[in-house]
Length: 71
Image 1 (spheres, one colour):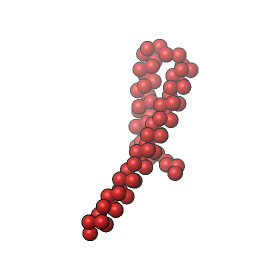
Image 2 (cartoon, rainbow, N blue to C red):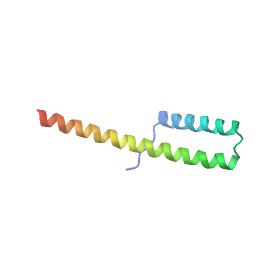
Image 3 (tube, one colour):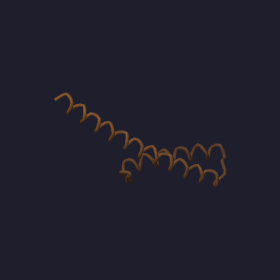
């Protein structure tokens, strides 16, 4: 399943990456290394978003199944 990030989540992702990049700049990390870290961090953020979404859907499904059992 391919998920599209909402604009709110894209803003959160950008904020997290920007904060990290500022910290890396302060400690004088080379631009190429910062670029690699940025790409990796973006990838991790999107994977986590997708996993969280899938976990949320599983929880909703399990709750609806429990509701049916108790009726």
